[in-house]
Image (cartoon, rainbow, N blue to C red; front, side, top):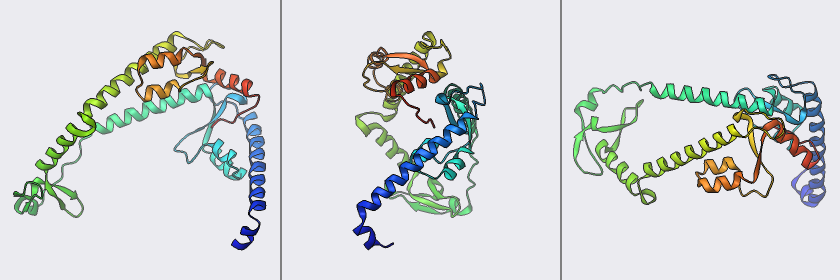
Length: 270
């Protein structure tokens, strides 16, 4: 088939592709349900497919639900499933928290390792170069390296680079950037601590699960924003409290069960 054919039959071909995608989507959903029926949560043994999710063991290329609902072939969906463990929503939350803690620990350990000192060659110690900002001629060692491999240097001396950096910090966004970031970080910490304390004192209204790691805010009234989004954006405490008052606390499993009851159908999780 060529471009001329598609130009003449554009609407018919579009309808054919839509029908093909819908058929594959339905087939994928049936196959995923069949897969989950024989693959309970590997941590707690939960068998309710409503709360079961695909948890990628390593870096993922995409969510299983995205591939399945996007009309990919079952073979491609199954390739992505093979990279996953099946976990219920609660156990998935706990595993995600453990992985995040491990990554933070590795990052902290890595930041403590000092970078290897760059050895100055004879040219850097003897040659001189004129700075494009201050116009002073200085030893090449006072100019930062552009490339360690080729031993090339910047055309602006380190002293001028530091001065420019300080000036940008002092003028950007109408005030010191580091102070603005510090205030935002401090506010997020306050909001996160409030959420953690609230969830600690409010177990799941359905099953009484009390682990804050798996508890979620389930809106019962019209929501303005997700509570987690308000924390990330460093919203005011009063704004976040007002949003929390619209919610009931449920564990991730019960939240999904209630959502299925409300929409009247099964929705595939990642």
